[in-house]
Image (tube, rainbow, N blue to C red; front, side, top):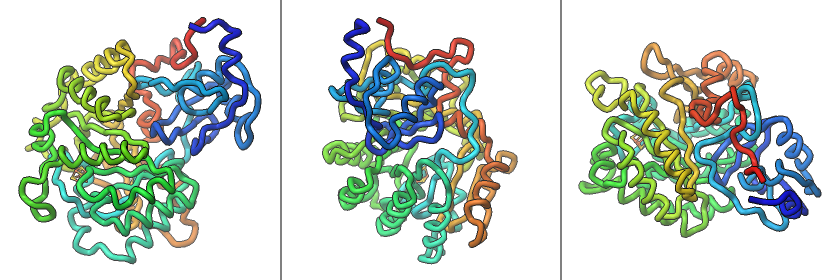
Length: 408
Ligand code: SF4
């Protein structure tokens, strides 16, 4: 607990933290790979700081500094936020009319064949024809899309490093924070200098602390990698490499029937904390892509999955462990993401057809076309909720108070 006078002494000089992106009341913190929605009092502080440091005092500064949104002198220690994204008091999530995130395929190739792969329909039928012309289209559309964050994904970005390098550079050059989404199967070390140069956040996929469970859900594709390749082994090695190199690194986990257990998820959490991971994102498996196949119905997480995840967050917060946890609500709003295929089409989930709708975009008026499709075909509330944790019980409009400085 802090006496008020002590609190005020903590905020002598304040500036926005490096790489933080701001759009009105929405802020993205790259090292946490996390969005926050600010109430008017916190938004006013951030607006005041945008572009210039200053002397600001008060509880708002302390909260913003603890979340990594601003830096203070003397330094304010960061704290984990345990799945919460609303800072202060809000009656609802801010409306979103432009994408927060765009997911861009560097390639349709992938060395794994995950049982639940949501992107399968944007890989099969694309791989054989992938070419340089397609990449130019991806770069054009990615550059024109007014998102705060560009995710380099696939397929596996490490499977085509030359394409990945160009995509990272284009996203960064057009003002976006960049995230590299990877299974870890490939040579992450080769692109460490690029990742440093553009402050890229690396997000590694790992579903279980038990390598056998992980590798059963995420088996290797023998057409790309040798027999015995372990997705779990590669994921752990990629995490170690990123942490060693000082690259911000998070882990994402797809929660299926096989992994819906408090004990199993806590074992994974402990493994991640031990590896030095400070952000963990959990998605309940979505019945799209491969997981939409009725023959794979046993993969889908049970109705209790949300309760299991809430319990994991609750226990982690109670223990005060230094790991952020973000739960996405994609299972409730499957068409909440915006994708760019390896061919440079815009793609959104088509819930009725359990596939993707794709749109070929014009050369002229590209930005306007992207926005039109985004506003027409993406569930905008679902998009905000996916990235701002609207589905997590911790956000309660009735009380509103979610992330504030601890009371004196
Ligand atoms: S690593 Fe990603 S793209 Fe590759 S099969 Fe798994 S889920 Fe699909």
